[in-house]
Image (cartoon, rainbow, N blue to C red; front, side, top):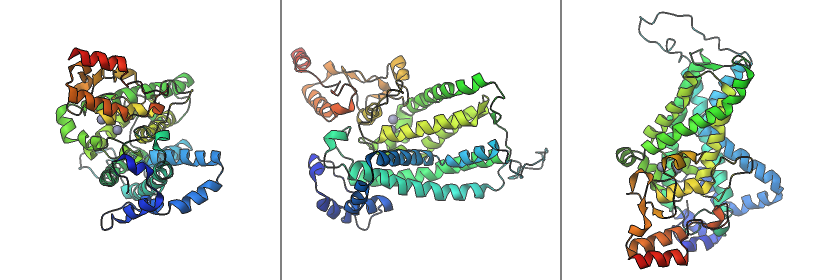
Length: 405
Ligand SMILES: [Zn+2]
Ligand SMILES: [Zn+2]
């Protein structure tokens, strides 16, 4: 990995970049990421021959693929699609006695390895293969002009942290797809859940309503899980790991402490055991969320499309990484607005200002104010919907603040 935490890196040419990459020799380097960096010119040559629109589609599909692999959920999709078309697993057990101790059959987990092994192979292949492509697509190909696309153009994740997030991300991935394989195996073997397959079983209205209902419930749940992981004890022991990346990249999505990641995963699928849901709306929303998880961590100034007025722009979560205890939501910003944890211009947020309320800017001393001005200056105005940095302090505001002292 080859990004330094300094402005001049942005101007660094491909040659220098390569030298830097080889300097990492001896340390673990993620395969495809390094490969694509080293062969940037070759890959760029091929890429330029692809029409622009086709290139966009490839990048979007790649983002979706990595998204599904965050939890290995394509294995669940496979199970549900099979069931939808009537291929129920023959391994359905008729045993009713649970007195003789639990066997894998009792737990509906027979043939677990037939789920786990492919899940493992596909998840890692996509994570490194397609994830490497995304890294190249965003960070290598466009590294010379970060002010055009990067949320924090003056700041780059250090090579050490890039390596850290990929190592941590791949460890957590192992836990994630193991949990997913357990669920997929259990459901495939006829394990009980509230998931149904006959489209009109609970009426067409409920089928359609499930999309917004699942969306809102999951987002509310994830807001609270995230916010609770920001409480001092849980933050210091678990969530802090994810906040090592002040300039997140697509690889930061899975770079979470396994304990936190598995907690989120288990709590999210709980809904499948509580209300009757058709598998399709649930996984459609889940995949949408994974996709945006990558977009939100990409560090790129992605903005929501006109057809998703509820969706915060990428800068919303980028702000969360830059300023820590603020903007806890993901796919709706309304929870932060309701609970007062939404970023406000006259407040400052740091790793030691817990609970999402920050500190009043007027309470800062001269040095702290200077630091805050610099931090805000690192935000790209183009990442905001108005194309102006909505948090930049105007000359008048600064004068007022300084007069107060
Ligand atoms: Zn956080
Ligand atoms: Zn994050």
